[in-house]
Amino acid sequence: MFEETDRKLCIICSKGTLDMAYPGLVLANAALMEGIDVTMFFTFWGLDMINKKKMNDLKFVPIGNPTMGIPNAVGGLPGMTNIATKMMKKEIAQLDFPEVGEFLDVIVDSGGKMYACKMSVDMFEDMNMMEEEDLYDGIEAVVGATDFMEMSEGAQIIFI
Amino acid sequence: MTTVRDIAGNEIEFGDDGYMLNPDDWNQDVAAELAKEIGIDPLTDRHWDVINFCREDYEEQGDAPTLRRISKVGGVPTKELYKLFPKGPAKKVAYVSGLKKPSGCI
Image (tube, rainbow over all chains, first blue to last red):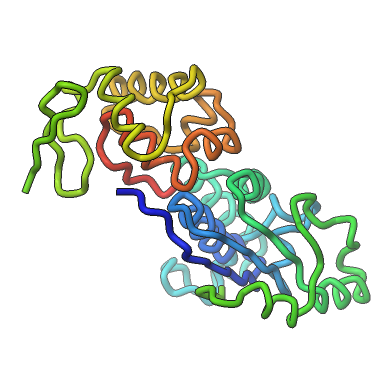
């Protein structure tokens, strides 16, 4: 019972929508709860998850999502993204899952390690989409893809 | 298949998953013995704060509390929970508290 594991998990988060942020956060937290070593790597739009100005304001976009049963013509109307986002956030809170920022705190407090992708940070800075200071304080470092390769040696990798 | 084991002088029934079947068979001596089994020895006051909260919460809610609930409602921060019950706090706490295997995702 409760044998120690040397299992290692790396989760690459590349998306910045609400529905694509939660799977990575839930999996990271679940793995930590199982005693698994967790490293998260945030790249491209995934940077929004660790951008202090955006993390708690990620959106769920109903357009192009057949599961929702909302025709694209309707889902594309002004305000629909905000309505859908509000609905999903309400559900998430009802299930007692934290907001993105608080979820990151929980993961860091549980021993998860987080890194931001250097290329994406450079690119977003060039495009004036963010500043490095906007990054969540729990981030260990901004690293390149080759550093990530070193860190993820022997790990199972999940790309989201 | 259930197994019956002698834990601190009590005959305790365990389910397939290794958790106690009947939370009412639990007492503090059982907790101390189960904790020792999984490498937590001795149980400090802080461990007891967590265990007592879980027992009380179970009485009220009928389920082992999630880690989030233990930290939010029980007042023991996540970081400390991982120190008290290293590498898998939710399951270890439930095990020591004589509760069923937790099913929550958080």
